[in-house]
Structures are given as C-alpha cells and as structure tokens.
Image (tube, rainbow over all chains, first blue to last red; front, side, top):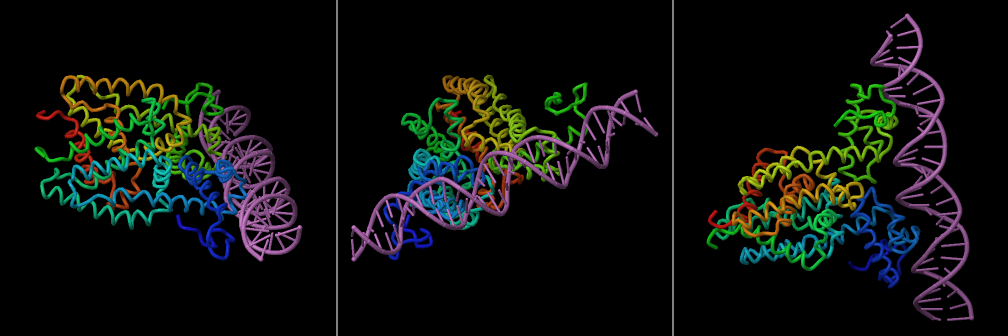
Length: 220
Length: 220
DNA sequence: GCTCGATTTGACCGTTTGGTCAGGTTTTAC
DNA sequence: GTAAAACCTGACCAAACGGTCAAATCGAGC
C-alpha cells in the first residue's frame, strides 16, 4: 500500500515517508492480523495475539495502529485491493469458455495464495458486513451488474446457455472460495488441500469442467 | 433433542424428565445462541447478548447451561443432527440426475430454513473446527467416502462423466451453503435472498441446471 | 560524540466478560 | 395450606481486554 500519512504513523517524519522500520513492522502486523481476524472475526480477535504473532509487544503494535478497529480497516483495505481484481478481467469481447475458465482459475489461485483473505472476507460478510457494506453495495454491485450484463449478452448471442448470471457468478465464488474457507474440512476428508499442486490441479480441472460443460451451449 | 439428564439440567427432577419450563427456556436459549454464534463465532459471542435475545437474565441462562462452552456444544449437536441428513439420502440405486438434483434441492432448503446453522458451521470450520474436528474426521469422512464411491460407480457405468467426486460434492456444498453464509452480500447485489420464493426457485433451477448439465454424460 | 526523534515496553487504567452466590419468588407435590 | 424444589436475578468476583503513559533504548543526522 502507499506510504502512510503522518496521521497513519502516529508521529511520522516531516517528509511523510515511512521509515524502513515502520514498513517492516506494519507488514508484520497486517500479516498477523489477517490470520487472527480470519480465524476469530473482529470481536473474537485479540490484539495481544496479533502482537505476539507479529513479534512485538501489544503497546508497540498500538504505536503503529491506533486501535483494533484501525488494524481491521487496514486489513480490509488490503483485502479489497485483491478481491475485485479477478472479476474485473472478464472480457466482454472474449470467448466465454476461455473467459470463464480464466476467471475460475484466478479465483482458485486467490484461494491458494490468500486463504486468510478469503476467510476474513467470509467472516466479515457473515457478521453482516458492518465494515464493508458500502463497498458491497457500491463498487462490487456496480462491477457485478456490469459482468452479469456481459453474461446475458453471451447468452443472447447463443454462445452460452441462458442461465441466470447472478447465480453463475455466485457458484464460481462459492466453489472457489470454499477451498480456502473450508480448508480444515477438506483436509479432514481428503488429507490434502488447495495448497498442494496435484489437488489444486484436480480442483481447477473439475470445477472448470463441470461449470463450463454446464453453461456452454450444446454443440459449442 | 432427548430429555436432558440431571447433570444437564443442573439439578433435575428425580425422574430425569425435563419440566415444561426447562424445555421452553432451553429452546429459547439455543435459538438465540445459534444466531449469536453464527454471527460472531465462539469467542466473539457474548453470553449477555444470548440471554437478552432469549428474554432472560445472564444468571438464569447460566442456570440452564453451565458455561458458554456448554451452550456452544449444544448448538453444535443440534446442527450436526440436521447437517449430515441430506447427504445420507443419496441413493446408489437411484438415477444420478434425480439423486443429485434432489440433493441440491435439500441443501438449498437447509440454507433457506437454517441459515444460522450454516453460518455457525462455517464459523466453526474457519476456526479450525476445534469442537467438531473429530466429527469431520469420523462420521462425515465415512459418509463422504461412501458417497464418493457411489459417484465413482455412476461414472464407471457411464451414467455420468468421470468427474472427481470429492470436488463435485464440495461444489454442491459450497454453492448451496453460499446462499446462507453470504446472504448479506447476495442481498447487497440482488436486493433479495434465498428466503424469497422466486429467488430460491431461480437458484434451485440454475444451480441444478449447471451442475447436472456439467456432470451428465452426453446423450443422457 | 551528542542531540533529538523514533521505537519500544512494562505498569497501569477503566471497562468488559464469564461465572458465582445468596436470597427472593414461583411452582409443584402432598 | 405448607414445604420443598425449581426458577430467577442483582450484586459481586477475578480475569481478560483495549488502550494509555512514562520512561528507557535505539537510530539517524549533524
């Protein structure tokens, strides 16, 4: 993220840039916070545990972030930076099979690389999205409206079957995020998970295969 | 659930049966607890808030359930009672299209009728399944192993395409539970949700259509 | 080498939380 | 009608939690 302003650092340098110590510590705090908030939600997370995982005292952590809510807002900001990107790449001029396949794979990659981000998102939404409700109703809704129109256009042109685009998008989100959010259950049932290359490859192939065969027009 | 033993009631009647007052109050507590744990997870939930939602004092709630953990165990027990039932009904002798379609619809019904149960399950699993890990590795794994074999047999007989059965089951779970777990996001994007008849019908049709078209053998 | 700002932390604070207990009220059984 | 058990709750407790602060240490700049 961008260099923090003075208010962000608490008492920053006059030229506004963050010191190397600040950058390192903020990064460590945010990484620890992702994990803690992902697992326990905002209310269940403990500042003391975030600090311990970041390798510093609780007071020092609060030197960098003024409050628990400030930490949470920062991790949500980082999350949203990567969360909407895959859907943005869906190209109206592209081939539906290739576009949807690429989208599914990008989402599975997100689950593999940022499982904590996925769980954090799920936690925030299950709590009623108190901190990101306006994002859901704003930029996300605008993006989804745009892409559901893309899917409708493909269907109108006979390139895919006429399925409800919202439910198709929900299915792709649900299925791909499941590998991150329910990793514990998946591991209990299969002994492995999305972070293993073979498992991930099988997931990509099976998920893409079922969804693509499910929406492609016959004879396509 | 069965009538509680003396230890469950704290100081029960000598004949072991629960009084009407006990039954009523325990039910109210569990309903309130489902909602609170679903939203905030075990650590984030507050006994005071469960009590308020149940219409009683915190001390009275603790008269019925000895501790926060006892309440949590009780709601998990109720949850697991209904959670595995749909998958159990998958009939090896049945027609794959009908069996999978029925299963999808049962799972969507579960999401519509017990959204708090779905979110509670998700929360518990995202926390690493500390309280139900043994259930996942035990009865759930046994059930999933049995049903993945059913799906493999269907594929071997050419009745469905040879898809990885684990990923198919994960897809059905993910997609159907999504309507409960991410209801807040779905409402933000569509203005409605799975509890509305039209939306639910569209979800059932679209989800079943895509998955069934995706796994049925061609020409079937 | 010195000064000053940045960084760090243990002690502490006020509030919150899970849980206990004494005592009052209600209900049940005889 | 009475006694005992069940039910209920406000006051209270100890521990935990989010956050503050004074002071010590470290690092950068001159």
